[in-house]
Length: 310
Image 1 (cartoon, rainbow, N blue to C red):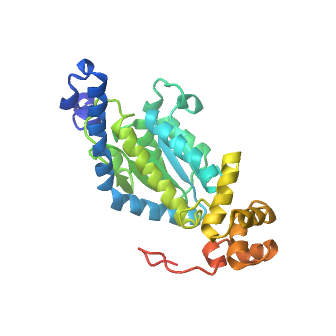
Image 2: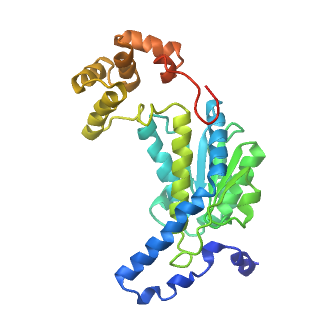
Image 3: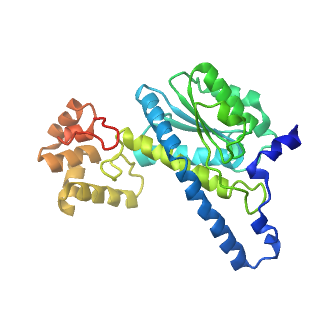
């Protein structure tokens, strides 16, 4: 059974182009890897309709009070933790809104935990600990589409009634049939057989970038292409805040700095001040009346291109 399972895993196949990899020069190695990596963007491109559907479902669930929980093991789990951990500082959202779950727990982020990815029981236990509900979205990430921990998580999520999304580098595998939406950019065999931290990992990272970024922007956490809700945690980001206000409003640096101070470093309030010509108190009232919708508070609300929604 195990041998037959490997037959349909592209992630376990040998790559003919790299059979003499250990005899190549450094330049030959990196040239080959670069050629192989060029397949990744094309593979992800083929999955864009599925990725867009996933974004729509995630946005709907999050607006209804749900969360998005990434689940993975090994490289997939580390990518899950990475993407989830970068959302709060980038978009100013709660750490609860987008979470990453890795087989083996915190220790597995930096070290391999023997047998962790094979435990279905632990996947169920971990999701129960998070009090998974039907409002939530579980994104199972497994390069091979066969990882037991991930399969256990999405099966339990479906039982609870949560939305399930699968992300894999292999379209033939059980993950597809156990998820509501499946995203499977097939990138082919790795340069190093089975080392899915390479092309498969790159493809997964690209997909997660799209899922979280498009979702957060659809949720209103950007103005144009500017990070209007980012956290200011160092001097570089403080300077970026001023540039964001300047770029978004078309005002001078000094005007942006003044507005930012008056708004107590709230970029949304500062932008309303600059574009509507009001003080900080009035800007806050406009934002409150618009229920936090920045475009509406600016008097710029309209139809979003592509889907007709307001």
